[in-house]
Amino acid sequence: MGKLDGRVVLITGAARGQGEQEARLFAEEGAKVVLADILDEQGSAVAKELGPDAAAYVHLDVGEEADWAAAVAAAAETFGSLDGLVNNAGILRCNQLTDTSRQEFAEVCRVNQLGAFLGMRAVTPGLAAAGGGTIVNTSSYAALAGMPFLTSYAASKAAVLAMTRVAALELAGRGIRVNAMCPGAVDTPMTDPAVLDPSADPSADPGRAAEAAAAAAAFYRKAVPLGRIGRPEEVARLALFLTADDSSYVTGQHFVVDGGWLAGVPLPVS
Ligand SMILES: NC(=O)c1ccc[n+]([C@@H]2O[C@H](COP(=O)([O-])OP(=O)(O)OC[C@H]3O[C@@H](n4cnc5c(N)ncnc54)[C@H](O)[C@@H]3O)[C@@H](O)[C@H]2O)c1
Image (cartoon, rainbow, N blue to C red):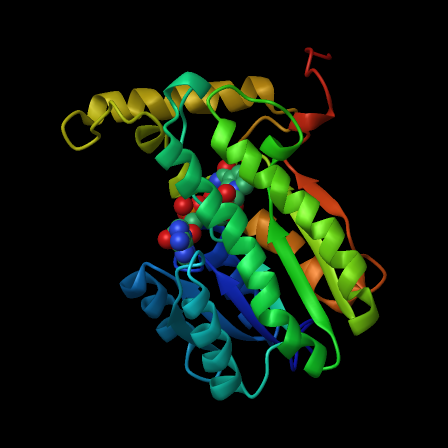
């Protein structure tokens, strides 16, 4: 018996990173998974690997209302109903406050904040009709602690936490639980040191990319009590807990999965 037998769950940003691992784990646990993303080739390939009985891929730009309507309809058409959503899609832009353009701020909020709102709103009627369900929103440690260069990202992720609490209160009566995850640093394309430093071109200078990776690993060893960056599978297991009946009495909460980063100052202890 899987923890998600009989469930149909839509996961956004499922072509790679945490969303991909969530899709793989949920399918393993018996769910029918609708993988949604804008990276159509990668997303379709993951769905194909999981097989047509377990997974389907839909193109969904989370900031577009019409895409949400089509994705929810496709989920119902393919698997009969929809009773779970993981709002995972997100983008990161790193710039100091004074270097952040209005356009960049708006785009980060369009994907991370508006996307989560549109998703919760689009799936609610179906989840209620299915007799209840679950919504898991992906926030970030950046919603809980300040970090330079993250004005737009932190703002959008704090909004996700605020919406999670409001939605949980409004939807509890319809049997829908809404919770949020706050990952720390997780090893996905989003945190690739070569990508985080836009001045670096890894193909032009592989040595520099290796240097950046080593510097990042040294930083996590020092800053994170557990001494390393997280793995996307470790976030997927939290998403599973919040989607499965294991968390049947949990709603309106956020859960930090960060190797202890936010717990305090990791002074050396012998
Ligand atoms: N990696 C980290 O350290 C970290 C930490 C905290 C929170 N998060 C959050 O976790 C989530 C997953 O990120 P990840 O680390 O797997 O990064 P990632 O970049 O590997 O994956 C993000 C996915 O979202 C998709 N996406 C981007 N814009 C989209 C849009 N408009 N519509 C639909 N899909 C879109 C991308 O194509 C990609 O598949 C994000 O919400 C991110 O903000 C990540």
